[in-house]
Length: 173
Image (cartoon, rainbow, N blue to C red):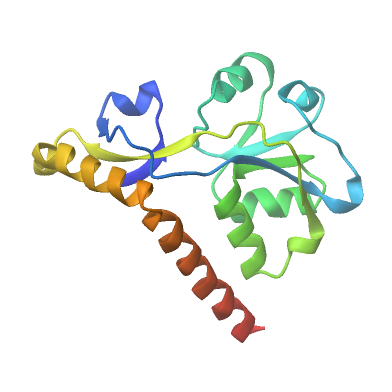
């Protein structure tokens, strides 16, 4: 089981629940001192960018990048942010929450700008391998997830976990 953006490539080997678990926008991170402005996909033209190898964003962004804009595929968040910081890339594109977690853990949020609006705000889904014995339970799992979303439990769990994580970072400073 994994939480992912739903794409045709992934649907070849995963079954996804119908109910999204949450939204994790695709963010473009740039060096704060570069003063770049990226409001839409077309603003990426002429810039050097990076994404994590194998990352898929959904919302038509993957197809746009493949057709109109070459990006460097990198091994990790670390590589992406380091290359932007060293001026080897103009931007690094990744999901907002992992990107911000990385920067907050390293006390580097002040060095980067998150461009707005987000290029894609796609929902993330729970995916289960088509080979998993859990496939027979997808209906029940989707029903429970729907109830948790409707009752606000997923948002509460996310907020609670985020608060615990932030306190841990504050203690380590």
